[in-house]
Image (tube, rainbow, N blue to C red; front, side, top):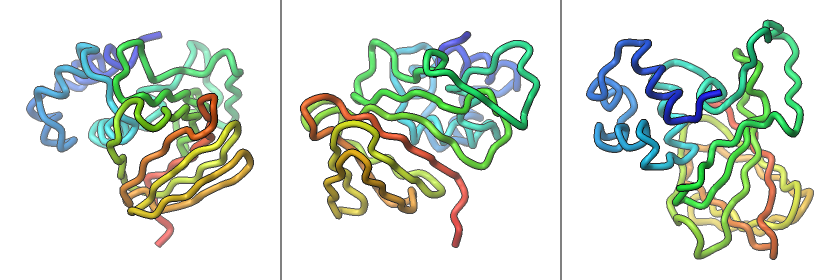
Length: 189
């Protein structure tokens, strides 16, 4: 299986798209895209969403895992050991992600697990993107800021919001929290 940087480069080559064209489609700089493709920069989930939209593919096509012989698009089972991590060793933003539905190529939702950094670790960037987002705190506790309003969420708590709103998430428990995120690039309104 390819890591994200190699998948992006292979996808761009297969589509015969230049970095300039991809930069225009994604509203990202050519320099940054080159760094991502070379594995020098680690993209945030909002950047991966922009790239998926620019290529007109699902986010799981970039971070998911589709095995040879998987032809069943009606049902997808991803075992815990088969989750595809997005983060690599040189991750500077502090967030780790695992894709949960990588085998189902056509879907309306993008479920993944996020392991947010503690305050002071990684970046304090906000990650707005199109659509809506649902989060369920599986382990630990988090502080989430959505449009300058902060919420303290504990294990079992949920939050649902329009993901076009600036938002960021940090672990507040001793151990890094584990959060189920279901994102959609569609808004109900």
